[in-house]
Image (cartoon, rainbow, N blue to C red):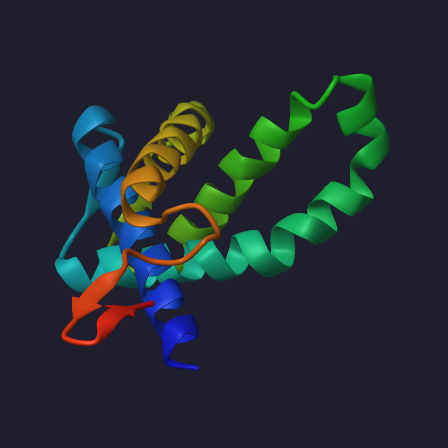
Length: 133
């Protein structure tokens, strides 16, 4: 149970860090405060876990015809959805969301490489009697 909490917090932190880094790259993405950043990261995770699979299922023929390119559009739509729901988090338009969602995926992947080791476990925490996972 505690391991699941660490994993959830790690993923949430990775999403927040990725959003924060992307806000420096794209002037069209802004956060009014830290709370809006963390709420946006949390809602983006929920949108990607719940809403995104429904969109993928409904648009599967279009995704198939475009050889998967339409998945990038769905990622941008998830970012725009979160910006519409979170007060203090603004995305200026579709193309900003499109390219920002690509960068968020890249940053999340790279940061995740440092935080998660093989097997999907968070960094191992050394203790006196061994290693705590």
